[in-house]
Amino acid sequence: MDKGYKRPTMRSRELRLNATPAERKLWEQLSARKVVGIRFNRQFPIGPFICDFVSRSAKLIIEVDGGQHAVDVEKDRARTAYLEAQGYRVIRFWNNDVLERIEGVVIEIERVLADMPSPNPSRKREGEA
Image 1 (tube, rainbow, N blue to C red):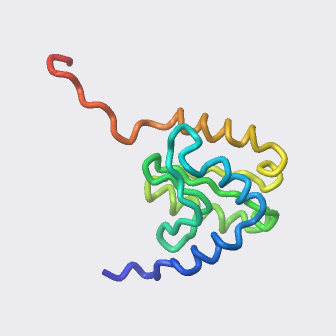
Image 2 (cartoon, helix red, strand yellow):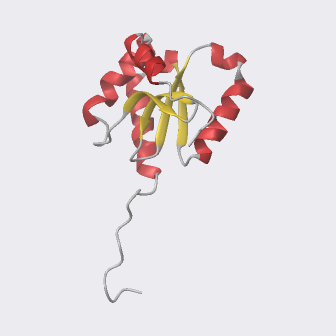
């Protein structure tokens, strides 16, 4: 089946090896299920895009943006629309927020995760309407 794009595995690997200081700092917080027990992958490809941090189980994408994203607003909108069409929620933080206010960033990620519906809702018990 031709998806119309190649899976950018080599580029993902390269981005992981050359992470920005903000990405490294946020990864310290997200790795090893440190945020509410949720597993994140970094520089994970979804369709033709490589996302900074992805929780496939929670269907959450976290993007850490530098100044170039203030210029490419329309490009980011199209990217976000594609990712949301795949069932993901996308949240973004500026590099300086991650570098200067990491505690607040983590609290916001925890809040977003708490507000998201469970990916595996409990089944109804017998006899309940």
